[in-house]
Image (cartoon, rainbow, N blue to C red):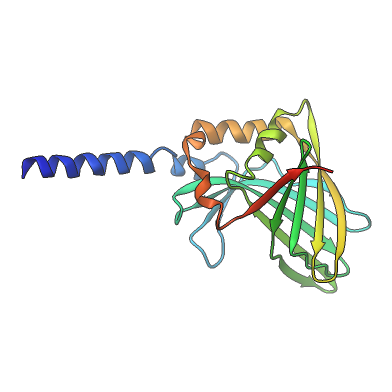
Amino acid sequence: MKKLLALAAAITLLCTAALAEFDFYALKDTPDAMTYTVPGTADTVVRPALAPYQGEFGEDELVAYLDYIILPDEEVATFRLCLSLSMFDSFQADEVRVTVDKKCYTFAVKPAITDYDGIFMEDYTLVLSSESFPIVTALSKAKNATTMQVVFVNTMDGAERAGSVEIPSADVKTLLTRYNDLGGSKQDLSVLMDKYPCTVEKAK
């Protein structure tokens, strides 16, 4: 009986250690960051004060954010790339392609759309799994900044709209260093691949 209790205690300690590898509480306490819960979920976003990053999107507006998201169901924290469009005509893309470091990452998306007196705000959220996390690594390794190419695709009518946004490498290094210091590199982000799929190809 004592052996069984000892074994159970050991298993509990191992499980607790696995879950404690990442310091979620410290991430929520990131200095100057805005923290909020994603509506309708238990997910928590931690948005550092380094963003937003203004992009180029023709006559319309593109803004990018790079923040953290804590996913309690999967028991991991990862990065989230948010792309916000402001325009007079709603586009409603269902696919977003992000090109960084000669690789193209394609995400299936569903925008959150708000109409402000005829101006449409479309927010696209890309949660990064082990497949797409190299985006962050590539952005952090640039000499000064990376001009990230972004294409929004409406596959129903074949329409595409392209834009770009410059992300300072120093900002990404700061975010990635904090993430790894809290245990980020010890996490298995492959658990997100089914829920947040991404295809990776060599950029054309």
